[in-house]
Image 1 (cartoon, rainbow, N blue to C red):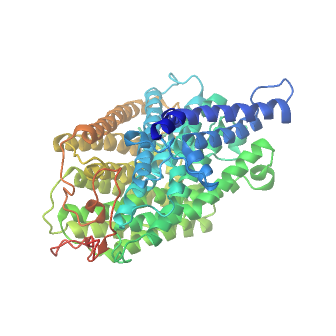
Image 2: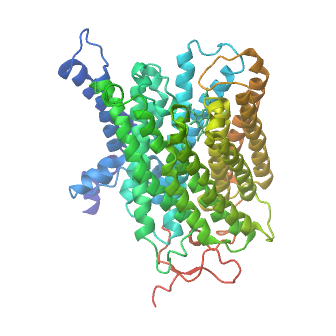
Image 3: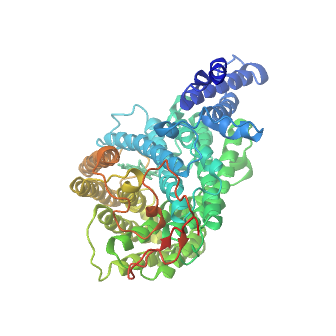
Length: 619
Ligand code: HEM
Ligand SMILES: [Cu+2]
């Protein structure tokens, strides 16, 4: 009888639908075509019947996103279950297939985020290489029009900031590690992160394909009213950053709730790991500032579609700048705070000493978060009176105090320890060094008198890359090497790891420290042409930049190789006391079959014994 049923209900064929990503692409295409045609031919036809109009492409884009989301799995994971229909056959594949569909497993989501960020890094990195190629000559030789160079700058900056800087440590490592670190089997809202991660490829591709609609010249900041003079590519800027910021916003809601409510027994506030503190603080920054900038983008978008001249007729020419930098400076800390937290997280394990002055580290990250909202106008010193400049200069320089606390905690932890150089600790030291240069050069920008000279020059490009690549990207790599055994049960090759670290250090410090020099000599940002006396320095910068580009590729390939075929290691090779190492390495298994109970401090390396126990299920 049973065999008859399986024959009449062809389970197998029903379980072999299109792969979710392919289905998502098809549904997205259908959604776009239907709504676009509806708009451009039926509801709002323009003279001459162009196939794509401003409003048709925007609404078509929204339809495409809905189609994509349903296709990659929201249909089975979210829509059907809310009607009481549970059909998990399509989406939840097994093994590697899980990574190519919407997943409720926080570790799968974390890896999806990391891969998406790496993809963004690659695309935006290629754009950087094109820029550096162009700048090897004082005249335009690569890009036919200046606007194309500027579009490339914008694509580079936008994808780097919103899909790498904001996303890799929070969406990637945050989703992957935080539930494990606090002793939970899942995040608070698994569906939220399962959706949000699929917005990242949407955002990256939207921005990357923006030139299809025409060039835009505003850079990653989308400055108004400049944007109103741009071709329609700026529409895809608004839509792309909207998708990316929405993704980060959703992750932040989830991580905040996770740290607040999913902690296991004994995981008290003075025991939660520093990385969890970092995620909490940065999530609050995201929750406060991302809606603010999203509304600003929506106003810019509406200005183009309606038009609704908010930034020209209604507001002053500086309204957009105020609104942008109100978010834009905290954004810098959204990028860097997780990195500061990771230094404090990884270093005690490396030196086997308790974290020095832990409370001050926590106070440090909290005060960086609070102060970051008070400094935005230092991006506009050229437009201000002296009396207006003073408080912003003051608050800006004040931020070095709480930031300095993080340095104090890490240096205090290394002090008189038996520090062993490993690839993660080497990369963290490099990160601290480079971020220090970023911070110290920032002091010059914080001083209005000097900033009037440095503003809009390559000095600034040098400064913020030292904070962002120096602070965040080096730490991201350190974290990837450090948690490799967690991701895969395998580890890296130490010699290749050290080589990779030194390689990018030379490429990075070479390229970007020369930018300070070329900036002081008069090299402006956002121009593909420059006086010919600056050519030798620019050629040197470009060569170092190419070395850096290949160096990143080298590290990426090494990590990829290590995950697939590196030497196998035990479950907790660093002998860390942190809870994520108590779980099995395989990302597809459950974290804790029985909830652990925390009995000691995560960083108590001065005492023997474990920080948490798994209680006996029968007792
Ligand atoms: C791979 C190495 C990189 C190189 C060689 C590089 C190079 C450059 C250059 C030459 C510019 C200035 C172009 C101009 O003003 O004319 C620039 C701008 C920028 N870069 Fe990078 N960059 C790199 C990585 C990154 C990373 C990792 C981030 C952030 C996560 C980043 C964020 C930005 C931003 C936000 C801008 C400003 C764009 C604008 O003005 O709108 N870059 N980059
Ligand atoms: Cu700032």
